[in-house]
Length: 370
Image (cartoon, rainbow, N blue to C red; front, top):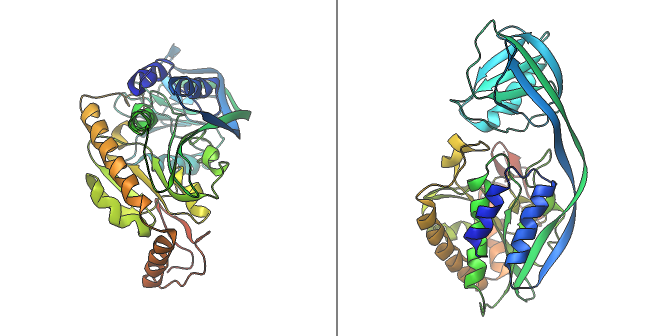
């Protein structure tokens, strides 16, 4: 199977929750498609299981998607003890909005409407809440039933060593996904599989690995990558939530110079919300390539292939090959010196990279930076 065929089969499996049997089925599809030696790296994770879920409005069941990781039973009146919401402008606003509502006295549940789309936006364990396909009216009688829970699970990352070396350029993408999950993140999986096809004999000056990660989604981001070995990393490149036809180059500042290799939306300090950040916290240069033009479809059942994907995939594959070639000739000492100089320009003098960057909203800043 080629990359496209693997992803088509993965799409047909439906939602692949972190740590689930469907996640492992996708990893197995990838493994079986490769004519290379593949290493399984065990991952201890959580799986979210929904045993039963219903939203009923005036006694009629309506199509809905439960917010992870809410649970329980609630019965009430829409606009009173069942709060009605429209989808906010950014998905990351849902969690604080939900938590604020659940702290209000008398609130039993929340229903969110987003122009007919269903979404999975993870929030805290709490009162049952959901996205609904159709708008619910104030005064409607509502009941929400959600028998759902998190439990311990075992999964694994797949690691492919393309070329041996003393240190490695690592390319990675997660395979778990909410709902349809094409651009987040099966599209990235397809790009890496195509890249592997083109790297039969890479003849690089450094080692190269490709990793397919378990459990990027979940109650804790990036469980699979945090448990992956990192000590021999030169640079880590994560592909996550790519969408035609440009990228956000979200990276440690020593890598910003390479942003010119891509069709660019913007350059930013690295976000903590992808698999590269597990490597960054350990002191390695890292970048995630993503595109927040995906926001209207993010974690929704409308995240499906479109007619511009194929051309963008070819462009991304070519850009990644140029990026890898550029990185093989830059030393780690040079990258570290660039990183430390940038920190000094922000008023921070560093002794080491490990733990130097900390989350700051949607991006990061230097520890101690004002």
